[in-house]
Amino acid sequence: MVLWELFHTFFIMGFISFGGGYAMIPFIEAAVSEYGWMSAERLTNMIAVAGMSPGPIATNSAILVGYAAAGISGAIISAIATMLPPMILVVTVAALLIKLHDHPIVKSIFYGLKPIVTSLIIFAAIRFAQSNHLLTRSITFRSISLAAIFGLSLFALVKLRMHPIFVIILSGIAGVTLYS
Image (tube, rainbow, N blue to C red):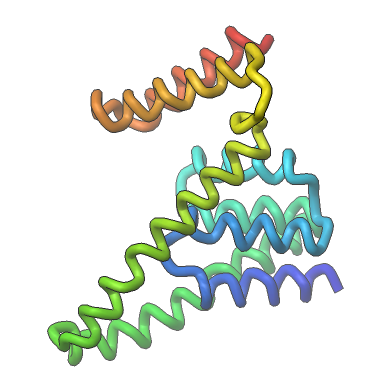
């Protein structure tokens, strides 16, 4: 039953999630909560690991969730279910776009999808901030330090154009320093 739930969930997500793996995170979070595969805190940690690991975050997250829910078979089923829909869609859309890529309606559709993809990514970031107690009403050392790490990381990525791997390493060092 769990294997079917994993396959069905990630297969449907693969078809309805536009904008890449980060846009899938709200859907993954809802499914994990609905089926009780793990706690929100554990999911947040797994998605952090999936984001730092090589490969697409959606597939990495699905594999980690599948493994947590049903072991190796859950990981395999979740990976296949996550990769199959995009593969079907890419092959189908590629065949159509070769013929229709300059059509005004096709251009308009893609232009219209950009805001929803952006909002899904922002929503995922807000949910992560909430689950990590970054957005709290009380001001504590923890909330201030988390906000500082966030702000400095964003500054390093956007303004200093630091490579994300360096920002991840520095953020990890800050976490060890502040919270050990």
